[in-house]
Length: 488
Image 1 (cartoon, one colour):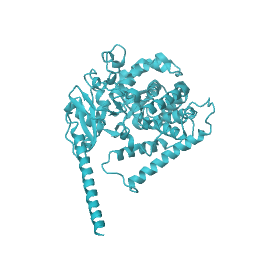
Image 2 (image 1 turned 45 degrees about the horizontal axis):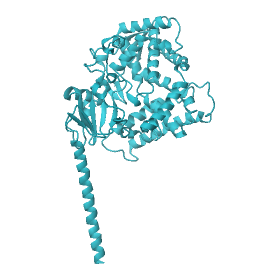
Image 3 (image 1 turned 30 degrees about the vertical axis):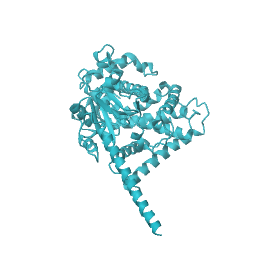
Image 4 (image 1 turned 90 degrees about the vertical axis):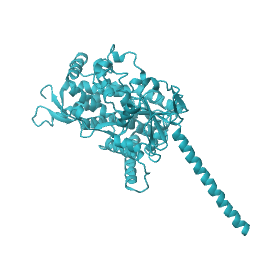
């Protein structure tokens, strides 16, 4: 009995020693990881909270990155959490050196979306699997050229203009919160693009955005979400609603898999015919498509805000619309792509006030920059899009709205680094829908400038901006006057 008691006592001692050893090893590894990036300039960070409180005090990540680069230079480190190192680089020529073998999309950064997406969607696939899945997307896009959905898009956009006119109450102009209207209009267009004429619920898009916003809030909370708390219940309620509604829409068409679907112009109709996708993967891809365009409505809001503030630009767009379309409506993408100046305006909007502030890549091995800065493996490289797009080394008068910089022969268009302009990301993980976005923004500009004179109420320099979802929104909306050019 004494031997047994001695053995147990000794075992407890060994277990305690083992636990202490493991704890010391973890702490040593943590401190070593923190010290590994000491060569990179950056602000002091708490061992407990990193710089997350500093980000909040700055008003969000975009203004914080702007401050960091202004204070510390083109290469800066900060700690998003105590053990999550971010290295932000606003020098395009340095970013251009990172190749596909050097970095990968950071899966851990989107872990907060588990439960919203399953494991079979493009967002969670590794390099080779992602490449194969993107090929499926490209095949799907090839089956459904933009011309097939243009008539319905034109109908939706023109109806929205008519709805505005009905609110004039005898006045000359209608006062429009273009940020709110852009959100509603973009969601309507995107739902048709994905689901066609399927019976989507009125608040699917609203619930979708609310879900993403809540998940992002949870992502940046210091404390974990405990089961059965208010926020836990809210998350469950939103996730259940969105997933059930999307599944209902998918189920309406799943039994048609294998048919030709010759009359189906929406993304869903074509994607469900791809026999390479399981039902689980198919479900995740539909959610992915809805997710990646969530915040893009700000492209519409910013586009019309700048057209209103820059009357000369608005007039040049109107003249080009008349020259290319005449008195008819466009029917082909050629009639959109040939609108050189209007597309330059769209590109400048995406530079001047884009819909995405950052993109990230995870280092696959240790990396040295200029034999001076050591970025350790597993660090996240931040591409601060909004800061790069205002870098004076690559843009003439970067704080001035000037679409001419995107016209052939302009100084800014010559010998520009490919990383100096990345509104849709870059490399193998760049946005699949960039052509769709460019066509839709061009179409919107043409249709509404043809029909309305647009004047500002809210001035850009007076807007109180805040970060929301993945871009920057106006806290009190963006108000414009839309004045019909003919009596309607």
